[in-house]
Image 1: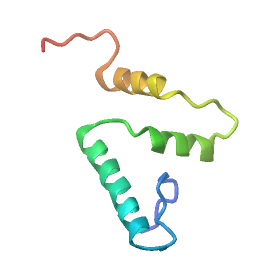
Image 2: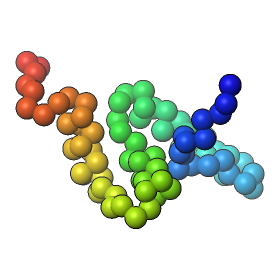
Image 3: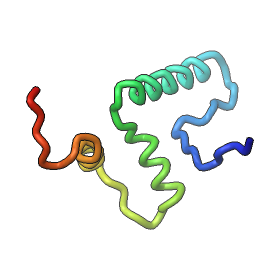
Image 4: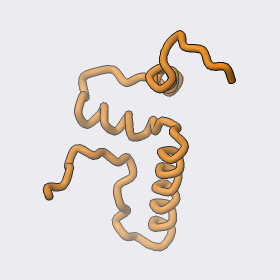
Length: 82
């Protein structure tokens, strides 16, 4: 099975320069996984993707990104009872 090389991670593995680098890398990955589990959009991954694949296009600010993701997830104009 081929490996998907389009996956972008803003936190590449450290260059193995000590336990603090490993701990920092593990913490960032844990935060990223936790955000994905609860459905919070990952702005750092978005920015890394845009800079890598679309370097000449503008990047949304965090509030713009968050609002766009919320609208995409919950839909515009829909109301919920609770």
